[in-house]
Length: 301
Ligand SMILES: C[S@@+](CC[C@H](N)C(=O)[O-])C[C@H]1O[C@@H](n2cnc3c(N)ncnc32)[C@H](O)[C@@H]1O
Image (cartoon, helix red, strand yellow):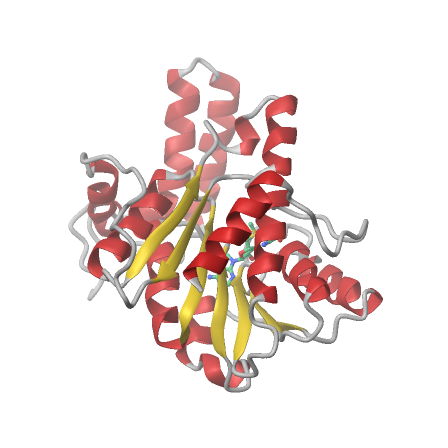
């Protein structure tokens, strides 16, 4: 199976053909990514006990593209629509697209991934995961948990595709998983010099034709045929260690806003800094999760 997975990667590196291109399907993914997911899933045809599963559906670009290219394979997507959805319309867009494209093999699991993974086989009607695409929450813990929680449900020759592996913390989660689970191996990795949001229009177009925001492809190698290899990370772990201080702070929940304010101040964008400070204060007053002490909160109190 590993050889067939490798062949798919070689094929999509050369000619990434979307086997179910539709103008209805837009979202965040690259052409190579979509073609690879479609082809990996086609390897499941005829295996009645396996399915495609993804975490992070958004408006269904990857889920529906894979389901459309593989009408006989059940495809499941987990999403609780908590991000990238300011108008709260993503679920209805997804369901409408599924209906218009007549994709009865595409199933939504409308839940937080941790809750869904508690009882995954109930949602997948007893099927194990043959192809697993991780494209949901990208924080370090969620990346690692997406890998750990899925482990008992993976088929023996499952392939795991981790999107957004450009991010250091995503690579670190993948590395931590690989180091602690030596029967899994990194088979392929590809990166771009930055996130597509920070690219020039030409670079962005190239990313759309490619893997979008970096990819790690992991396989189970029970026979230990492949050498151990890991995505690049930094030995300095200070950002991960900062986690402890954020968690124990009285206002840790405001950390992202606080960083925005400081960054704007230090780069001379004072007006925007002041606006963000105002927003920070509003958020502070409505905080649901506030510690009793300035720091070293244990949250028993
Ligand atoms: C980048 S989008 C996925 C893009 C999608 N694969 C596509 O084809 O366009 C990430 C998705 O992860 C979902 N998400 C974030 N945190 C989640 C969680 N804890 N449980 C389930 N889904 C989550 C968000 O709601 C969002 O729709």
